[in-house]
Image 1 (cartoon, rainbow, N blue to C red):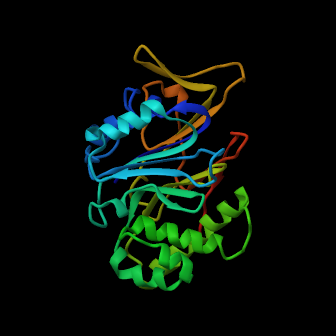
Image 2: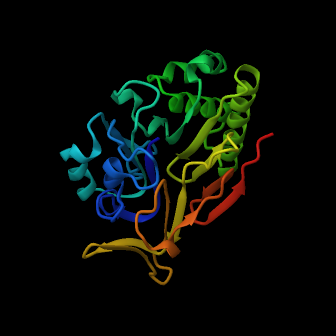
Length: 287
């Protein structure tokens, strides 16, 4: 399974999250601490927003291991963003190619996933048959992750709007998981799916920790919120700025060993980060 981080808040150099922390995403690409296989070297991707230029994100992906890409370091040390996603891949479904690298992008939306959908090949056509023509034509890769994102988009676009609210995003996620669960019940009731994922439109972020296997613990997912995440002299922490700055992180693994700054998202829960950077947890019960 992969590793990812999502950030929203005061614009920050991406380097301070991707490279500098003790357990940075780059460190997780070759030595992840909270999964059995520590290597996530099958490509990577970042996506960030420049609202003054476009509501759609900038996206850079590569099939290189994240630790071996000079362009990533150059971008990260020169680019500030108030909302961005970053992901390192351990390929399970789909070839190692750019079209299979996260985060996936449709219009203003980004999505990234850490997990898997068992027996995906058996249900792939069923998912595709549910999609509108526009969403189907957008698909370019082979992964279970991108196809679930397509299912989410299909649910979201069932109601035509110029701009979708936080509640719209949440409702579409609930509906898409419910559809996937129904497909499993009808076609492969003994199989399971694991959905640690994050979705954003550059304003709201929703992320979930969900799976259907009650016999194993879900892959880890944490959040941290506070003033401003800063790294000075090799020490990284969520600094208190007296309310002048705010930031929120959602991560597969804690970036630092400051345990009090990281909160594990409970299993079968959704975390919602609104534009005012308030964090809300919601049970994700799908019957």
